[in-house]
Length: 491
Picture 1 (tube, rainbow, N blue to C red):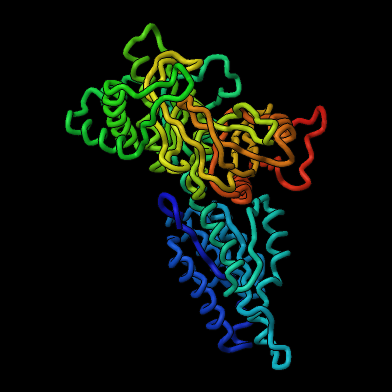
Picture 2 (tube, one colour):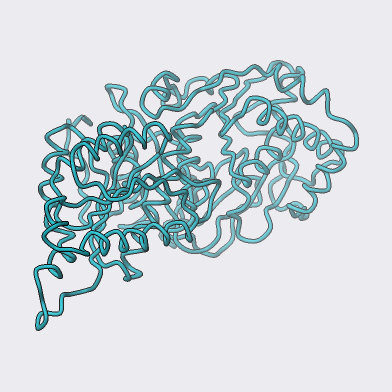
């Protein structure tokens, strides 16, 4: 499984104790099927915590307590045969984490000519699904999803592994520490967030930092550390001649050396505070030390983003979290906004200034020296590239009028072609129904003007993740999507 780490997935089978004396060998057969399922999960890199086969309400209570004590992040309920809902509900109630129901028949169909009741019970994986869902819904428990299929079918297994990716993203966000350094870009009302809401909704923590914390660590960087970082930067980036933009020139040796030193200090900041991600912004005053420091974070931040530590400029905590979600889903997650449209070719450029996920670049990412950071104070080194060509997904984390979180999604394509040589990222994106309709539909759902941009079509994974937190989620490119009616308020 790609990505940083894996979730601790609690697996329990469920069955009906009444059958065991009636049909000797049935329980052993069902346990063997569950064992195959768990072994395959481990082979795929999942950290499995098994509670065995649960067949009575007291056993369900014990399983739930075991999962809670061991700190599992996610549950798979493996439907072994018909099981009373009282063998499932106590597990979820006590574990306190999302649960996906897995119903995989051992074969595609029974052998009807030689069928027995034993065989039917071995294939009764689906029988109690409505009962279990009814009990969970009546208890107010969200069911993020379900996989119905067969035990040896790769299509079914792909769906199971997709849920493993969701579990990893859920666990990472829930345990995340996001650094908050500086303040929101003044006047961007969509950027404002209540850090307590992130703690309360996601279970994560917002760690407030000062630029002084970074200053202290940059000042402590030794010359040999800076040289090692310089070599890393030279190996990671391309340094082309300038294009037509008069403010985008070559990178000066002085700016590159300073960016390398700041990158070393940023590495220490992330390590010392145990940061999973970082949102930052400093306006700058008359070229002071803080302005120089804040203007030199782009290169080091881009290196860290490529290593799985999302960093968002303009103090955008929401997009930092969206980037983290996409990264742990295995899709990356680069910082982006809507740029100019190319109506002749039905595309919109999507990208941003500042740091980006360089592991997603088509070819080697570029570094340019900018004499001006448009809309910001300072100057220095900036990153330019387009995302790898192929399917892409936009994920915007926003908030509604009542402060609740909402996810706005879109799936499209990254197309080949030229991008401006401006020291910013730009991806030639094509989204349905067309460029005008996409931008209208996207904007009217109320996202922030930033979003996370990742590789692949993974909207279904983000939707599953949203259900784990009971967050509203809208895909504006999904077939059949209809624009919200006038006057509608999100729930």
